[in-house]
Length: 275
Image 1 (tube, one colour):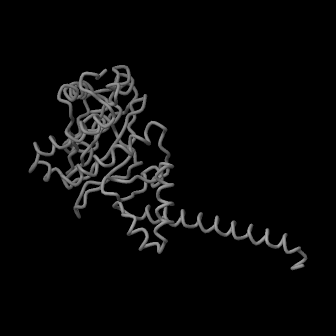
Image 2: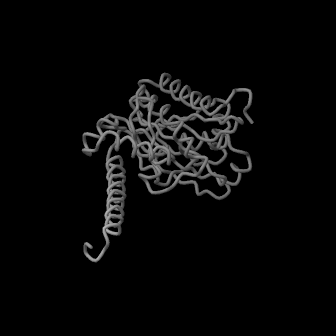
Image 3: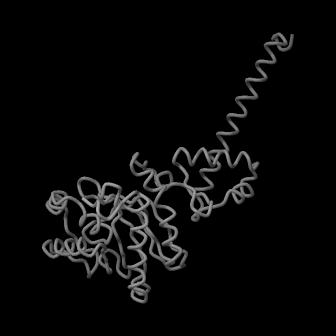
């Protein structure tokens, strides 16, 4: 007898405590990993995770893969890992948004690396309100950046104009009936008639520009992303300083449109299937 238990009972209790301690240790490691990734601005490789958190490589790999499969972490084309923005900013993706973000991240990172500028992925809901899903931030010391869950107006941003341009007409009509048109900068267009004309032009051109209408000194360039059925499900936006945009205007527009086309193709879009 030991502590009032038979040898068989005591052995079972030791196994149970060992199991519980193992489970608690794994839970702590998951939390440590989530906090670590949340504090990182750039994606990080498994080897760096192992070194920084002093984890066995096999354990770190298992934890990261579990988070990837659950949709909390994404792995880019270079094999580095980053926390999905929904975890970082406190609002969950819908079932449709999660695979969109996972598919978009390599395209967004490539565009960020090609241009050195911040890239943002956004969608539009049925009421014409915008929702940012993810961003890849510019490495420049002076750069365009914005909180992903902060309010944003559709009518005076490149992303919003692209999404409205390819939304059903009734969504656009309802949006302008209820939205309060405000002037964010001296350059903001506030005339509804001219805004509607701008949106029609965006639909013809296939991209939108916002030159200092939302934030003075910044320019946004956005292009639509289409799914396999031809519906515009998102927009890729590049945000930069207006001075840097003017120096590379045509190149940046081309790269943004190419990135949106590349993501559309990854989603199964073919040009003749647009609805």
